[in-house]
Length: 185
Image (cartoon, rainbow, N blue to C red; front, side, top):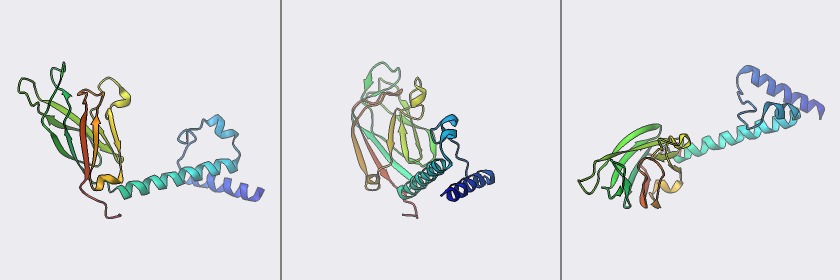
Protein backbone atom coordinates (compact mmCIF):
# COMPACT_ATOMS: atom_id res chain seq x y z
CA UNK A 1 0.00 0.00 0.00
CA UNK A 2 2.77 2.43 0.95
CA UNK A 3 4.56 1.57 -2.28
CA UNK A 4 1.42 2.47 -4.26
CA UNK A 5 1.12 5.81 -2.46
CA UNK A 6 4.77 6.60 -3.07
CA UNK A 7 4.45 5.55 -6.71
CA UNK A 8 1.31 7.72 -7.13
CA UNK A 9 3.06 10.72 -5.55
CA UNK A 10 6.10 10.15 -7.70
CA UNK A 11 3.95 10.08 -10.86
CA UNK A 12 2.10 13.26 -9.87
CA UNK A 13 5.35 15.04 -9.09
CA UNK A 14 6.93 13.77 -12.30
CA UNK A 15 3.96 14.94 -14.38
CA UNK A 16 3.96 18.32 -12.65
CA UNK A 17 7.66 18.78 -13.27
CA UNK A 18 7.35 17.72 -16.89
CA UNK A 19 4.64 20.32 -17.51
CA UNK A 20 1.95 17.78 -18.43
CA UNK A 21 -0.19 18.64 -15.42
CA UNK A 22 -0.57 22.29 -14.53
CA UNK A 23 -3.41 21.95 -12.03
CA UNK A 24 -2.90 24.00 -8.92
CA UNK A 25 -4.82 23.55 -5.67
CA UNK A 26 -6.34 26.99 -6.28
CA UNK A 27 -7.77 25.76 -9.60
CA UNK A 28 -9.39 22.90 -7.68
CA UNK A 29 -10.93 25.39 -5.25
CA UNK A 30 -8.63 24.35 -2.42
CA UNK A 31 -6.27 26.61 -0.51
CA UNK A 32 -2.57 25.71 -0.55
CA UNK A 33 -2.74 25.26 3.23
CA UNK A 34 -5.58 22.71 2.97
CA UNK A 35 -3.87 21.00 0.03
CA UNK A 36 -0.70 20.49 2.05
CA UNK A 37 -2.73 18.77 4.78
CA UNK A 38 -4.12 16.13 2.37
CA UNK A 39 -2.31 12.84 2.08
CA UNK A 40 -0.55 12.19 -1.23
CA UNK A 41 -3.21 9.55 -2.04
CA UNK A 42 -6.00 12.08 -1.48
CA UNK A 43 -4.17 14.68 -3.63
CA UNK A 44 -3.83 12.10 -6.40
CA UNK A 45 -7.53 11.23 -6.10
CA UNK A 46 -8.53 14.91 -6.36
CA UNK A 47 -6.29 15.48 -9.39
CA UNK A 48 -7.71 12.39 -11.12
CA UNK A 49 -11.29 13.50 -10.44
CA UNK A 50 -10.49 16.96 -11.81
CA UNK A 51 -8.96 15.54 -14.99
CA UNK A 52 -11.95 13.23 -15.48
CA UNK A 53 -14.35 16.16 -15.09
CA UNK A 54 -12.36 18.23 -17.59
CA UNK A 55 -12.44 15.39 -20.12
CA UNK A 56 -16.23 15.06 -19.70
CA UNK A 57 -16.68 18.80 -20.21
CA UNK A 58 -14.55 18.67 -23.36
CA UNK A 59 -16.58 15.73 -24.70
CA UNK A 60 -19.82 17.62 -24.00
CA UNK A 61 -18.53 20.66 -25.90
CA UNK A 62 -17.60 18.46 -28.85
CA UNK A 63 -21.05 16.85 -28.79
CA UNK A 64 -22.79 20.21 -28.71
CA UNK A 65 -21.39 20.95 -32.12
CA UNK A 66 -20.61 24.54 -31.22
CA UNK A 67 -20.66 26.10 -34.67
CA UNK A 68 -23.27 28.75 -35.34
CA UNK A 69 -26.46 29.70 -33.52
CA UNK A 70 -29.45 31.34 -35.16
CA UNK A 71 -31.08 33.71 -32.67
CA UNK A 72 -34.53 35.25 -32.88
CA UNK A 73 -35.82 37.64 -30.20
CA UNK A 74 -39.41 38.85 -30.41
CA UNK A 75 -42.45 39.98 -28.43
CA UNK A 76 -42.26 41.87 -25.16
CA UNK A 77 -40.54 45.22 -24.75
CA UNK A 78 -37.03 46.58 -24.66
CA UNK A 79 -35.36 49.74 -23.35
CA UNK A 80 -34.03 51.87 -26.23
CA UNK A 81 -32.46 55.35 -26.29
CA UNK A 82 -33.06 57.59 -24.40
CA UNK A 83 -33.54 54.59 -22.06
CA UNK A 84 -36.54 55.97 -20.20
CA UNK A 85 -39.44 53.66 -21.11
CA UNK A 86 -39.55 50.11 -22.48
CA UNK A 87 -40.91 50.07 -26.04
CA UNK A 88 -42.08 47.56 -28.63
CA UNK A 89 -39.38 46.59 -31.15
CA UNK A 90 -38.98 44.83 -34.47
CA UNK A 91 -37.98 41.14 -34.17
CA UNK A 92 -34.22 40.77 -33.78
CA UNK A 93 -32.67 38.09 -36.01
CA UNK A 94 -28.99 37.20 -36.16
CA UNK A 95 -26.48 34.36 -36.39
CA UNK A 96 -23.51 34.17 -34.05
CA UNK A 97 -20.47 31.87 -34.24
CA UNK A 98 -18.90 30.07 -31.30
CA UNK A 99 -16.11 32.25 -29.91
CA UNK A 100 -17.61 35.58 -31.00
CA UNK A 101 -17.98 38.14 -28.24
CA UNK A 102 -19.10 41.75 -28.03
CA UNK A 103 -21.03 41.30 -31.28
CA UNK A 104 -23.47 44.16 -31.77
CA UNK A 105 -26.87 43.84 -33.41
CA UNK A 106 -29.24 46.64 -34.28
CA UNK A 107 -32.58 46.85 -32.47
CA UNK A 108 -35.24 48.85 -34.30
CA UNK A 109 -38.29 50.25 -32.49
CA UNK A 110 -41.78 49.68 -33.87
CA UNK A 111 -42.60 53.34 -33.22
CA UNK A 112 -40.29 55.69 -35.12
CA UNK A 113 -40.42 58.26 -32.32
CA UNK A 114 -37.73 56.21 -30.52
CA UNK A 115 -34.13 55.74 -31.60
CA UNK A 116 -32.65 52.38 -32.56
CA UNK A 117 -30.46 50.62 -30.03
CA UNK A 118 -27.77 47.96 -30.00
CA UNK A 119 -27.93 44.51 -28.45
CA UNK A 120 -24.61 42.91 -27.51
CA UNK A 121 -24.16 39.15 -27.65
CA UNK A 122 -21.42 36.66 -26.88
CA UNK A 123 -21.31 32.93 -27.70
CA UNK A 124 -18.45 31.16 -25.97
CA UNK A 125 -17.90 27.85 -24.21
CA UNK A 126 -21.30 26.63 -25.43
CA UNK A 127 -23.13 29.46 -23.67
CA UNK A 128 -24.99 32.32 -25.32
CA UNK A 129 -24.81 35.59 -23.39
CA UNK A 130 -27.14 38.50 -24.19
CA UNK A 131 -27.62 42.07 -22.97
CA UNK A 132 -24.56 42.74 -20.79
CA UNK A 133 -24.80 45.03 -17.80
CA UNK A 134 -22.58 48.12 -17.87
CA UNK A 135 -22.98 48.38 -14.09
CA UNK A 136 -22.41 44.84 -12.82
CA UNK A 137 -19.01 43.29 -13.69
CA UNK A 138 -20.37 39.79 -13.01
CA UNK A 139 -22.79 40.31 -15.91
CA UNK A 140 -20.27 41.90 -18.28
CA UNK A 141 -20.73 39.14 -20.88
CA UNK A 142 -24.50 39.16 -20.55
CA UNK A 143 -27.29 39.50 -18.03
CA UNK A 144 -28.92 36.56 -19.81
CA UNK A 145 -26.98 33.31 -20.02
CA UNK A 146 -28.17 30.30 -22.00
CA UNK A 147 -25.99 27.19 -21.57
CA UNK A 148 -26.07 24.68 -24.41
CA UNK A 149 -29.04 22.32 -24.64
CA UNK A 150 -29.24 19.43 -27.12
CA UNK A 151 -32.70 20.83 -28.03
CA UNK A 152 -30.90 23.69 -29.84
CA UNK A 153 -30.26 21.24 -32.70
CA UNK A 154 -33.98 21.25 -33.57
CA UNK A 155 -34.64 24.75 -32.19
CA UNK A 156 -35.73 25.79 -28.71
CA UNK A 157 -37.88 28.70 -27.46
CA UNK A 158 -37.26 30.41 -24.12
CA UNK A 159 -40.58 32.17 -23.37
CA UNK A 160 -41.17 35.33 -21.30
CA UNK A 161 -37.50 36.17 -20.77
CA UNK A 162 -36.48 39.38 -19.00
CA UNK A 163 -33.00 40.78 -18.44
CA UNK A 164 -31.23 43.28 -16.19
CA UNK A 165 -28.70 44.54 -18.74
CA UNK A 166 -28.61 47.88 -20.53
CA UNK A 167 -31.64 47.10 -22.74
CA UNK A 168 -33.69 45.43 -19.99
CA UNK A 169 -35.61 42.99 -22.18
CA UNK A 170 -39.07 42.39 -20.71
CA UNK A 171 -41.23 39.31 -21.41
CA UNK A 172 -39.42 38.53 -24.67
CA UNK A 173 -39.37 35.18 -26.45
CA UNK A 174 -35.91 33.97 -27.43
CA UNK A 175 -35.56 31.19 -30.00
CA UNK A 176 -32.19 29.46 -30.49
CA UNK A 177 -31.28 26.97 -33.19
CA UNK A 178 -27.93 25.39 -33.92
CA UNK A 179 -27.08 25.77 -37.61
CA UNK A 180 -23.74 23.98 -37.91
CA UNK A 181 -22.96 20.69 -36.25
CA UNK A 182 -19.54 19.30 -35.48
CA UNK A 183 -18.13 16.45 -37.53
CA UNK A 184 -17.54 14.71 -34.18
CA UNK A 185 -21.25 14.01 -33.54
